[in-house]
Length: 434
Image (cartoon, rainbow, N blue to C red; front, side, top):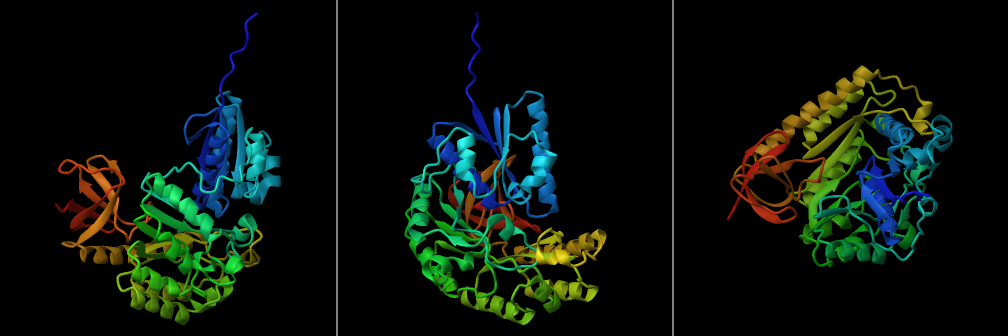
């Protein structure tokens, strides 16, 4: 009698959505590896874990389509089991269980121990900072807090991620040290709101103190700040940024809109006057600072006048980096009670107009870089170019520096000095300075 061959399970973790999901997948993979599991990221595996996004319509559609794609593979016998976790699963678990019942199990954003158990692994509390990074080896995301206490009308994140919870400074430093020991040179600090950091643990906004601790970590050369909220911004952070060369002169501060009427409806707790004053204070405190922001157009009740105020303000402020999204009408948010009255075609047209203004600003600012030299980190090689970034650019969303690979050999992850010789809207071309 022949015995059935025992196939060794391989777990494939598929990540959708934002950098916070990337981080969560890396933690999951670290836990699985510590339990002796064979785990890969977005590769072939007979067991699949899909870490979903549930933020806006496009992200939800991508998550659902990915689940359906893997269910087809399961039915075809190409995979044995499919588990779903993350924000979509947290937000819509009953609906998903009803609509896509063949998924083996659904887990929310706070159910890591349960997910691990379903995968035959144990949750190990002692694994502070142990994770399998999926980004290029030179940079990693470092999540310093979870959840959000802000009441923004359009946002479903508190529904999916819960209240704000800061990670203790000492735990973050341990994680940074382990990342640095593995060759990570750039830490990208992420949270739903960096500026709230420490309020729950230390009864004060403590981002500046955290930065002071992280700059002491050997091997780390850049520390980058993502996702700051404009209301109650801790200005001591700018003093550290200006003083400490490791803290990049860069901040990602999503402002969403600038018309006072829209800001009030969005429950942002600020005004056009206050926001403009804050940004001027940023530039005064750190003169060569890059400010990245994101905006929403087509919010309920956004009139042509509101939009023109926003468009003119973008032209006046000359942001170094800017992204623009169309409003997504999300259930269980405060804004869901409002009529989604801006037609989709108008939303898209407004977003395009904002990005046209920004494209011209970016081109003009990039022309000013020609002939100047910058410290550049090399992220990857593509075709005949090595692709790098300056301290003023974050991975995947900002400008890149292209260096001719037929003339120069560079290693991924190394820093080099580059002179800019040509510039487009969002790309810079440079040559290595000997």
